[in-house]
Image (cartoon, rainbow, N blue to C red; front, side, top):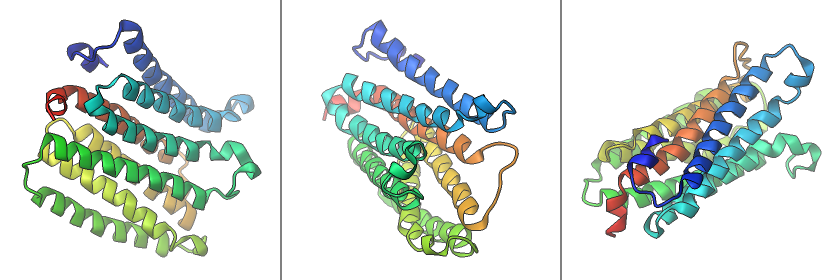
Length: 259
């Protein structure tokens, strides 16, 4: 959060504290959700899903607050990140709706929501690269996308296709895996070409890791007994994408102001 104090974000102390509040709320709620997953207290354990879902809402609040405070030249990227986080948050909240959710099993509906969210993240990456490093060779991106293609097919094969459970979900998972891998690939490509973008790239890697762990659970029946590794990697990954992008935009403000 100190990044916002070092750079001129043109916001008041109260607005800066609001961004800090959302970050602290995310950290506290996610921690509470992870603890509730292994808690012996029934009433606290019953709140696990609520804690985790509201932690995503805190990141949505951070993303839209930053988008509202960003300069006009940065707002397009900030809004795309906020849209992506909002779509993910809707998927995270789906367990709370039960049979009221259009897709009671939540798998197809969530893949659509998160897939659209990844489209928003990919567009944000494209905008950042075009603005900050327009003259950089496309070689890094091509290599990153080629790597993403290999990862997506290999991940889908080992995590989904080779599993013995939920056979009807295996082929719908392929396009989603491709979108997720492209998000990771373009983020890594941007990070290679652009200083200060590695936290966002790491966030997309953690997001990919989370969904691979989830796929292994869905298609192979894996159980993660020590901790909810799916939410640990997912929650931190989304935070790095949202907060990392905002810090990057502030740190590279001159590139956006002069375009």
